[in-house]
Image 1 (cartoon, rainbow, N blue to C red):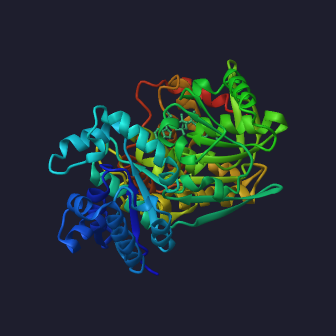
Image 2 (cartoon, rainbow, N blue to C red):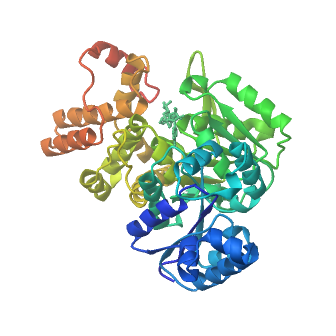
Length: 494
Ligand SMILES: NC(=O)c1ccc[n+]([C@@H]2O[C@H](COP(=O)([O-])OP(=O)(O)OC[C@H]3O[C@@H](n4cnc5c(N)ncnc54)[C@H](O)[C@@H]3O)[C@@H](O)[C@H]2O)c1
């Protein structure tokens, strides 16, 4: 079937009808609201049907409609709040359709119902409606929890339909095999794949999610039922042995044993921190990387580098820990702050310059700027961008797993970048320093007669168009930069 139905379920006032209508327009599907269809066919309002024919008759009408719609295709179906709680309806509609559950906070549900003066909601005509909503949500938790959840609180319906259409249009099954020394695993990239992480990665046994306090509240729940969610403060300054110790303690308290799996859910800091915990806890447990920043998606999530910093220097303690799988959900990029997104674009551009001219053209022809308030690029475009960028790294790492030759090209611009980060006292972000480093490398290369003026211009334009700085700040002392480059650990022969 070419256009499987999209079914929206969820509690009342979570936006099913409004979002469904917009989604149908975006996808070029027809829209059906089951309550509206029942009212149109019976010539009665739902309240009248309940009053005159009783609830059982109404549920019978719902069941007949579920069976009928399940035979069609190309529909976005907004279902009445209880329709999918019936096992037969749920089985019929989900057999050939994709179901999403819209969710909102109890406070927002009650506020939306209060605004919606035209519709009666007898269920909530009680002295404390918020308490009632919480109760009902708890009763239905298991049923709604079966489906990927889409939070609609604090979002306009256009934004929710945009995200959903991206998830639906993205290739659900883009898998890039990675063959590392002595292991083979998959890098899976999709839109909305996080709720399927356990199945996709083949996890059994207890699961511990390690995340930070920006990412955890947004996505930890999407990973399904887990033994424990361990949340650390965000930022590289917490990539320390002290944090690692507190994580070990929480794993022990939660009875995570050697059969356990760690899901690393976050940016590059979490990739490395959680990878290190997985490498060392009980002499090593499985680790699944779920990168949520663009930088982690296209760079740090593969290669297996794991570690922490010491007061004496960065990454002084570490290990190589190859993950069981990398599951990259580009839908998480929707919430990544614009500046962090731009920083990740520096690594994407770097990979395009190293080995993928088509990717460079795609970046040049697209709009990848994420000014605040603007809708992010469609998920299918993000999926392609991430997959192409990571493929460059995969090819190179596989060719040179022990960093003895070709792999050094992945350091393009990084000798400058590390010096810039160091001299700036880390006020310049890694991705921004990489952008400046790429430009500096191109300029040096041009002086040595290796890079054309046209390519220099092209690199500057693509960096600037991606909201990245291309020039080293004028107040940064060249002598200090040179001194910092002299301490680069990649230095050879003076
Ligand atoms: N070892 C290596 O190979 C290597 C390579 C590149 C970068 N790095 C390091 O990685 C760090 C930068 O990477 P990063 O930007 O991924 O770091 P990060 O993990 O600190 O993430 C950046 C910020 O974005 C937040 N965030 C991440 N995903 C989010 C999402 N989906 N929604 C909302 N917020 C989200 C995080 O909480 C954090 O505040 C630097 O410390 C850099 O030195 C290491």
